[in-house]
Image 1 (cartoon, rainbow, N blue to C red):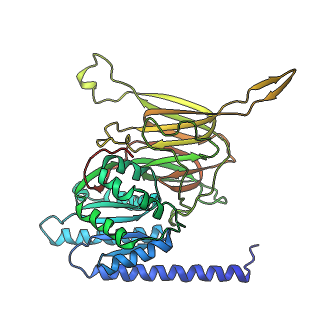
Image 2 (image 1 turned 180 degrees about the vertical axis):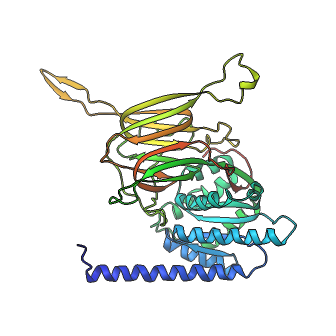
Length: 422
């Protein structure tokens, strides 16, 4: 039986007071925006992470009359997005002209982009296709991740603004001790929002998970999760990623997750490491090259070949981001990086045989249309990291290169399309 100590009770009271304070702040921020006739541009700040930096940054932005909304949980994000969609709906119902595209600035890490992507896909999937023209997202990164590196690779000015050493030192880690020049930071954000007039469409992929939210649950749940970056299983540390993990296929460095989603209603914090070797069965379907002399009517039909891998896996990463520097993202497929544990070999020293330490073998597989993965051990569910957010208790997952509804892309703002070396 769980015993509530004085210390734990006080901790719960502090957590509840903080929750109420955040809820009250969000309520007042949205209430102030609700009174506006026009649909406002918003700056969404994730105050759940980088708290020391983000709370002061939000305050400085508000002082310069930016419309700031502070969010610290997935529920906060969902409520904010619902408010935004309601404002758009009312505008379209009472006005004959199309609304000016709303600019939504996202100040947060990799998992924060994912937290925004989920309600965007969910709510816009229920709206007409032209609604996608009414909104654009501006990603102001806190912490380095694959999406930022990709955007920096196709936009030299974005690279100079948010991928330079000064920005990295300030926002690479939540506990950074670097003294921030808030005037410079806000100047960069303001310049980005005002000058980034190009819309880049990031392709949205789909993950389907079968999982148990709690260990005590008897039945499994199923959910569909959109993602634009990658899906990861295993630990990069146990994979010994010194083996050429710069990913020739996608140009993105395979890195361990920097944030995790403890539960669907909570914004991610720091993930726990999963260092053990996993016995997995992975089925994947590859796009076959077009046959020579094929009939014209069969050109649109994609032939796929199925492959199966049953092995001990240290690290699995599946990327949806296009190749670094590829603006068009024309491949329309996934790229899989698989690091497996090789079998121990006997090494003879004189007359004695000694086990040689197992090595890691890395391989990159391109042109993957669909992939499914399950643990061969019924007692060992998986922890799956999707765009920096953790899902635990996963028995099975399936990935597809395209989202199932008409929402196929996530529109982000850029200064322009100019490839850079970064």
